[in-house]
Image (cartoon, rainbow, N blue to C red; front, side, top):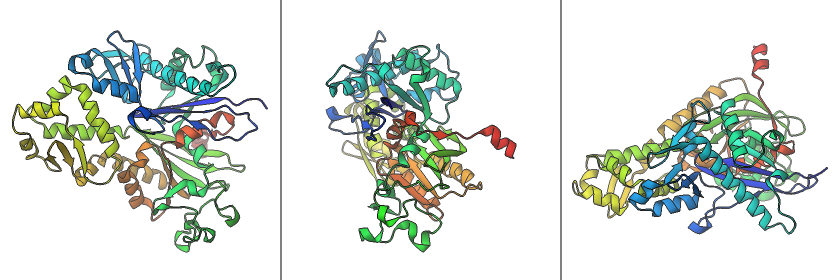
Length: 471
């Protein structure tokens, strides 16, 4: 049957990573996922999508290493370097071409294609280095692999062509060798992985700490899928003898709505399980630009409300790397649904004190307070940063659920699906009508599914022309 060497790259707005498979097609091995952040005392499935260039525009670092190096720099040194973060969404609604430029943290511009291709080159080189370090034989070159790149649903053909060009410049494929590159939707990759998970690979939003597989053999309670109160939200793991090993959704005819809550976009579609376990798209994948970066933007706007009299504007200009330190802390804290405590950098405190006592900046705002070097954001204020996202998710879901699609459950994936606030909103709005499922590691679902894509695990796309004819 031959080999099935695959490297899948999730080049996300907020975080990026990769998985790979170097097994023969006869073997059903789980994909290997690179872990990141050891140097920072972390263990994460992705690394921040940020890249650092020197003053000559030469690549220096990517991910945690880029962020750490940039944060350590002092004002003038930081201003000489090109630091990009969250730049993927800079191309939203833009005309893709080789001359397109994006702005770095120091206000200077660089060609978007160079930023993207150098990012992909780093991920490619790191993947090959990881694989070859564990290979006793000859080293694997990039040409030995089929490469999978994922894009959000909002990407049009010009954006996909831009990614192909970036992949060529990164050395992932050569000109004219398009068969070695697969570009797929993040939603599809996540769905492919989730359909392989056993029932206990999911979190039930009504029973966060228990497995979905709660059949009598596991003596916890009855299966959520088999109680009369939940008769309209059937599980696909319906046979007691296979309750802990059978994938959750292999029953032909099952339809589910999948929501990818990413850093840049919220993407939604509907999949149907076909005979044999294949998937069919019943609703054209759609997306908006209301991902996790909107929460970050609202948080920054609130800091500007606190530090008035031009303090925040001056701080952004003089200390762009220190802003990264604040945002780094906030990224970690925004997953909770409680008051958050963010350390205030000394440089911000000193700049504020030049105007007035720092406590006085907090007198005219609601939802924030000062506590001996820390900025306290109240739970209620934190939730307001999510307002646009929550409204967008609710409206988009309702629009699709109001169609006659007979949805059995809602599946949430992506990094923002780890946010308690987002998950509670979806649960409050829709759990009375639908079972809400989330993989135990929602951020990994896209990466793990993507590596299966070239091996026949694809999704049959929604055919808009046929849909119009049927109407």
